[in-house]
Image (spheres, rainbow over the protein chains, first blue to last red):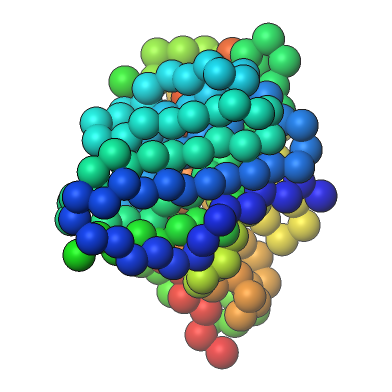
Length: 115
Length: 114
């Protein structure tokens, strides 16, 4: 079974803090994704990565950055957390060859509250 | 950009009954994938069912089946013999062929009544 883990289930931070959310997958997947989930809006893509050190912006990259130094690990960074970044953050991974879309496997999510 | 619409924010069903969740999408592509994901309360999101647009046959997975109407751009999920464990948020998603950009609907919260 594919396993995608996220470093924290719940996180409380203060405005202006730098926040790191970590995601690890154990299935040698090429692609990794960060989404934020808000009620009534579904999931919105923040960033994705299709290879080590490669990244692409999603729909809402403002205020976020990412890092992928190893294939199995994809980090989401909030450089200076703001209250409007309070949300559920979901990490996902997928295996794809030559860019073909494939099923995404999700982590349990991190509920981030910024005070 | 492609959009996915789930017009039912909430649905409820009696245990052992059948329920259908609606999903429509907008695309100009002919090759794409459609998905239904399930997110139980406080638990991980998991894939329920997947449909390739080039396949005319509707996908089925045990009690879960879809009604894929390509011309109408409709992709509904039918859950038969509903169980208490089916209670969850259900998300419809679309992904283009050869593209990792997956689009999600807003979700439908399904309640199962004993």
